[in-house]
Amino acid sequence: MKQPEIWIIPLLILFLPLFVAAQKYKLTSSEVSFFSEAPLENIEAHNDQTTSLFDVTTGEIAFVVPIKGFQFKKSLMQEHFNENYMESDKYPNGTFKGKVSGYDPEKSGKQTAVAEGDLTIHGVTRKVRIEGTLEFQSGKATMNAKFPVKLEDHDIEIPTVVFFNIAEVIEVTVQLEYESQES
Image (cartoon, rainbow, N blue to C red; front, side, top):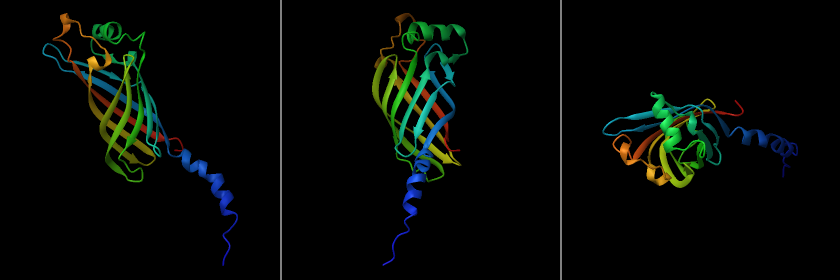
């Protein structure tokens, strides 16, 4: 019976951390936006200041969106958003921490994936399930999702005087681009 090469074991131990580290992805660009369709006025804002990490091996993902990073076409809307609705000084970030599943990191091209975890907005955390797409290509991963957020679920109050200006359910769009930390 042939003995296994004894030098293979130390090499595996030495290089295994490199393979594991290659599965961690860092964010290289982001766009988180929301859209409120209401009878009197549509409201839209964009934010490119998100920070995030994604572990392809475990599916674990976390991201932080600074609330004051949302940019509006009208400065008065931005001021009201931060001071009256989101209370950005008190609740400076929106966060998501959870797991992405339903994807194959070895497969190129766009695939359907599901993120499940805790979404915290305005200091209120809710369990969510968000369907989207995930694409792997050349050491990069791109995530896209669009999902509704009900304002009352996060204790965001709409004053009756502007009730027809702001939708009760906001459409959130997330576009995240990651790069392997080993790239």
